[in-house]
Image 1 (cartoon, rainbow, N blue to C red):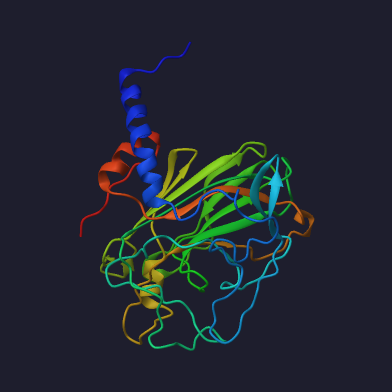
Image 2 (cartoon, helix red, strand yellow):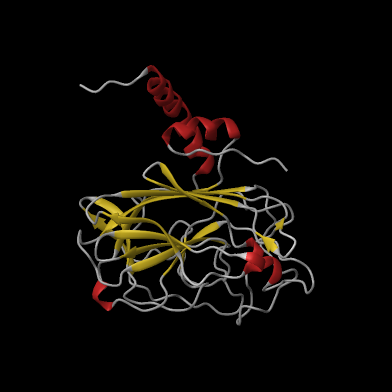
Amino acid sequence: MATLSSANRRATLALSLVAPLFLAAASASAGFESFNLGTIDQQQGWTTRDGFQTSVTVGNWDQAIVDAGGKRVWRISNAVTSGTYASQTFSSTSAAVAGESGSALWNDRGTNGSSPTAPQFGAYATSNQFYSRFDFRSATGAAQNGLAITLSASAKQSTVRMSWLQIADTGAGFALRVFETGLNGTFPGSSITIASGLSYTDLHSIETTIDFVDGVTDTGSGILSNDVLKVYLNGSLIHTGSTWESYYRLNELTTPGEPRLQAVDSMLFRVAGTAAPGTLGNGFLFENVVVGNVPAPGALALLGAAGLVGARRRR
């Protein structure tokens, strides 16, 4: 019989004591058991429609709350795709807007996404940390040619993204890929694969934390993002990178000549690019979705025993 070492017993006890506190602090949404079957749009803060002032566009995606083995989950595929943003699927919002000091949501307003109200922002950031968690699995338990979705920390119903994480079916399992900005907000030619060969039949857990840090890194020849993005797979840290802040510092400026400080409050689930019509009615099953803000340093440090390792950065 396997036994726990004294260190592991202490870690397990710490986790059992802190986990409820963590979930209470971080959770903005969780399971889908209380959702109605059918489209997720406008259920408990989730949307598949834009937030424009004078018109509303509802995304017609292949998605729905469904019953899977007696449990309600959210199913989505990329059988239908689009280059749009605001009418893609957005989660409910975090308890606090997250970003560096002085950052704001800068949600798009107006029928063309560029006409501002006065002023053009939803709220300023009151937290420097953003957290997301979700479990996913295949709806079929087998390969689905062309299946893919990207997830991003975003401002709800907007056209902005501060991170990019893709789940893609390679034919040999699921791969996880990230896409991050380089010097002066430029984008590399391709994404980085951070995990591959994930089983089609298993349930996989992904967690991301973003620690927004004031300012950027000045290399002398340009700027780099200094925010800290971490990705965990099934409790283990698999990637440490950064956000797209260097892009927004220099592009899509809200005030000419001034850096755009972008905050987030939601997760964007985006289906774009080449559609995979063969995935219609299938795709991914998502459950246990949590969107919120990472708790205090002590709680997060204890949770490191379960893979959530991190510390609040001091400014």
